[in-house]
Image (cartoon, rainbow over all chains, first blue to last red; front, top):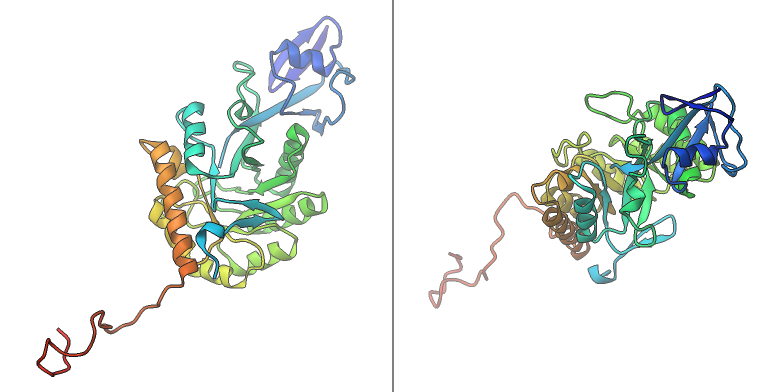
Length: 66
Length: 267
């Protein structure tokens, strides 16, 4: 079992998902988002980024602000 | 002399037809926000970066604002020091290729005043990283010079604390910043009424940034229009050149006496 923390919530997967698969599984749009994996900004293709057990992800998007 | 209709705002080489910059926070709905921004005539809108809410994962400002229509300016709100601000700026760039950043470092929650030391530190780093930096700052003329020398595209002194609607409380300091600046001066934060915006523009500010006053009005769309008119009126007055004040009366009517009486007192 692969356990991944996403925005403070614990998710479980049978196999390690790619970042793109994880994003899709949560119905998050793939555009205009920023992802940090274990505190590091992910800048590459999310389809090529295979996640690992214990990863901590933060995904942010734009909201209203001044 | 420049006429208001030919007058444009230039920030880092980009031209804006409106001198009203607008924030997108705190509107009662996204639809209302989009309508108000349209009504404001603004060409630049700020936005913030926050964690995706896993309960409404497709909720995004980008569903409501067209990047072809507006220059979108992500801010670093929430940052309490330079490192957090740089981190947020890098996330904004990764999320949408945004290279313009409104730098905000506000470590203290009650007045949300910007930290001058951390703001300057972050500004230097972000300029080095290739960002176009528009820093929110206290109305300190010396700090404005430091930020300008660090390579910032504007300086954005506060009129009053964020969201306070208290108007141009820092007027004398902002006047000095305007006098000395070689980059556009944007009065940001605290403007609560169109008259505050007009007052800022009459002084020679290059632009104002307004969010709360529009967003929390009973009718944000009408308030956005009112601010657009205030900004325009203030800018026109500045360009027209005000005649100055006098302690004593200065007669408005000719001083040639009363009808044919021959005396020279004006009534």
